[in-house]
Image (spheres, rainbow, N blue to C red):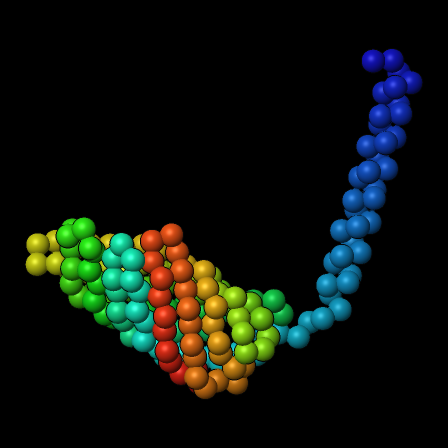
Length: 162
């Protein structure tokens, strides 16, 4: 490559970098205008059921651990029973997980990561699962309805937020 071509290429890359920087600063300034955090309830209690390759029923308690203008995060603990349909394990146990909600009104997109640890008569089993779904929950509390799915299960939940 000649020096002239290298200089033109260098100038073009500089202009692209400058344009990208301006774009990033502009989007930051635009997004910084709204700083209102989502104001969802701090505590949620609900009954969960999942059906798929394995079945699970549990009662759960969620506590809000973080809230910002775009998302709210909850930590979750629960107790219940689970069974694998291919016969590997069934029994009682507990679960832990984390939930991310988006939205400021009644309808929310929900992402969950959970692990159910149970005890069969012979051994301990673990069901990790990640789900996506919809949650109806008013910002100030009250009735909760959840519908979730993953590659291997579908589930619904009913509960109360306070």
